[in-house]
Image (cartoon, rainbow, N blue to C red; front, side, top):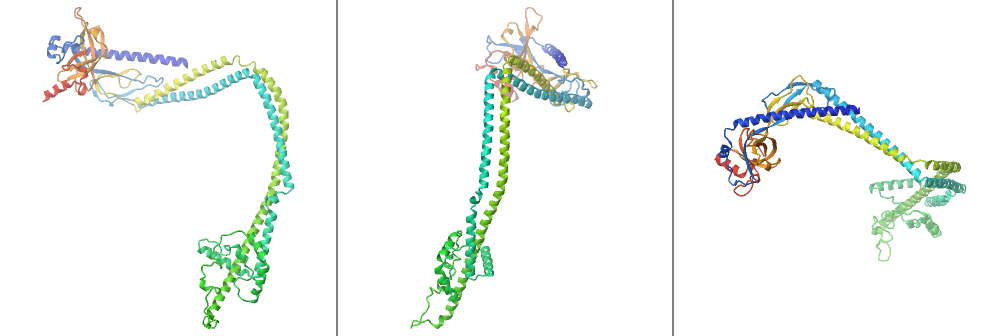
Length: 623
């Protein structure tokens, strides 16, 4: 593979050399033709040309200035075929759209290849690029793995050789630490299991969930509820109706609390039969009961949960009842002799009936609240009891889990004891072997790295070359056509239909109108003053002045006379030369020739590289 690559490189070098030689030959031939035209078109000698083109004003014959006369010529470019990397496929010309003397513009199609040859060439280049890419990727993976392996082996050998004693001591210390850690974990597992077992056996969860107190609170709430319900003879229908009314009121008020639930605990302490004072015999007896049970009612109220109080449901603060409707505060009319007037007797009876009804509603609401509190106490008790029972069940599972962990810790501790004995002997053996390593590790490592780097670099070069070849192919002839890069006139056509186009061969040569040069003869006395790259001023009749740069100086004399030796100097015009033609007579001034203002001609230019004074003269001629 390496031999084939070297052969391919040599072959391409020879192709490039032949192409360059062909281009030089064509350029030289065209240059000789231009020089011949120049000689033939000169009908006057140097003195006559100087009379026709007198030096511009301000040219004072400086010692450093050189002036010569010549003719313009259009630049010539040779187009070569850059696809020189095909090995098996050949590109065959199907059609040529140019002939000698044709004028072309930049971007014109001038040659078409056959579709079959384009497809074959593309397939070859794509396969080559893919193969090189895969080989490079595989090489990267292999290189990385090999480097890691080499580095690992080198580091391991060096470290083992350098720190063998320290590693041995650290290994022993680690073995002892592992053994101590295993014993510590075993002891901790044993302690955790014992503690949890004691907690389960003593049933301490019962106290944590406060089962006894919650049960007592529920029983007390239930007894109080039954006692008040039986004492006031509140029926289940009354409680149900009260609950429905509370639900309706709650819905109408946007989810407000029930009136019974909003009652103050202090209000419950008054439920001894004195509220309302309807006057019947049973309620009169309740007055006595009220005085006998204040302590019980007060204690019960303290165990009830605090609820939000809605003052609108409390008969003692009911805002719906007008102060004038209260029989205890109503200002009753009295007769002159101190008795009631018969006229208001009916109103007082209705008022008393309303008060009795409100008292009854108050009693029902209070009993309903006691019922609700009983339900809440029951819920709290049953929930705690259920959670306690779940905890007991979970405790059994946790106990079994801790027991399993204890057994595992015991096994680990036993294994650690055995491992400590074995690995101590193994560490001793490793210490003795590590001392012998590392002596050849450095040399082996460097040798491996050098070989890996060379292999990967070669694969990368092949990948980049294959990818570049494919990209260049697609750019130049991807659609099957060749396009001109610049405009000009075809001077020589080499490509032929039906033949293959080899890489590096010249396709055609054409003139470049964007390049214009002047060839002048300079005497041997002045040629030493000039050098390639220097600036010059070119004077063209009817076109003004242009800046120029010396492109070449022919070291071979252009004259056959022994007394008058001259050398050909080529000057490229700068700026826009699209309006100029070939074979125009031009005067070229080299050096720091000064104008009337004392400024060099090549420092005072107008548009298109012309001097401002030349542009002014051109405008004067037009006017």
